Image 1: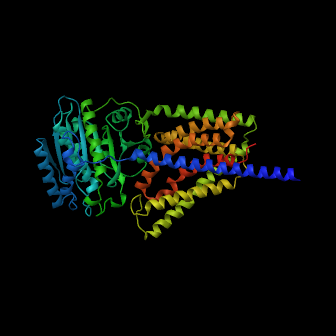
Image 2: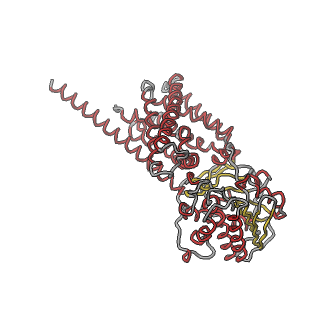
Length: 547
């Protein structure tokens, strides 16, 4: 009796110890994922600003640009207004003080301002574009005052240094808010339009946060390569470019793109609640965002100006940021071959699993079903949660990250709801083996990879690289090495494919919520379910008693 009781006590103690150790590994996993998410947002970090007297004349200074913004963003200046005429006179005076060749393009509807700095060679010109009109009720400090003053400061810095080989033309368009009228007038009616080899357009959908390069012309492979080589690459990914094509939004760049010009389009999106509102004022503009915009503008004008403006056209590129690395990029023609290779790898792993009796068609199907149900659950509960957030805010039409002191808490709460919904779904599939749950989730990821590879190739990287790593980790986890079946090994496998997923998705989701507001969280938080579909089954083995 004593021996039996002692044995039971030891067994119970060992079981409790294993469960305690398993809980520790879970906490470690969660901590690692949170840390990865935090580090991934480092790609969105803004540069520091310095007083004007500390910045060399050949560099961009947000402080110097802000002096211009204090003048042009005092009040709304819509197209055709007396206030716009005052801004125009100020811009012409500043351009004239730089000794630049200036022109005013007058049409029946708009008045564009142009300035040209001669280069040392004969290549095609680099065109800087920003619109100086506003909507009637907004002073337009962000949209598009930041771009306008960045152009002034960029031209000043270029004049202070060695001019690039190509001419640099600055086009301050009028009538952008009326339907891109000024850009159309330049493209189709001004002789300088024939000299342009590259367009760099700067607009705004907010007045703070990182400046995104969200749109390119067609055949952008060499454009992306040169953008990455011009200096610290902006936050950019080909998913934004493909997604933007599906939206009804337009900027002046639309006119140039449709006319066949090569170019890049930039804008900040944080502070969306101020967009086209009286709140788009000097007080709400981030000087660090202004510094980043101007630094990009100057570096790109110098780089492409010395290049002769237009790289030879090639194919399109897939590109994305990784913290601590240069812009990752590769040719879009590799998307489908990579997808085929991953499909074959998945098929091989599943077939081996069936032969070894570690996987079954029914189990994998149940795993896929659990992922689909979790996606539906996350979409439903976050839709309800975002509706409640709007209700608590008094029915506000816009709630984006940073809109109110509580907005980030709302987003965090919605993430917690998404985690809870996914966990609840997977709890109902406790009868399915962990291996089969993960295999089913991988099948769901594979379907998304195939879909994006065919219809949104620029966004395929979101699934290509996490899935490739996940399949390799899954093969190790289900392989003959028993050490990987234990807690430490299982956690290592989880982190191997979870961290790349977090790094790729978190900054993109953050920015999309900033731009599209909480209204879209039912879609934007679906990656939570996708990630947990690969993680949660491992916790079953992590907390299980090892024999």
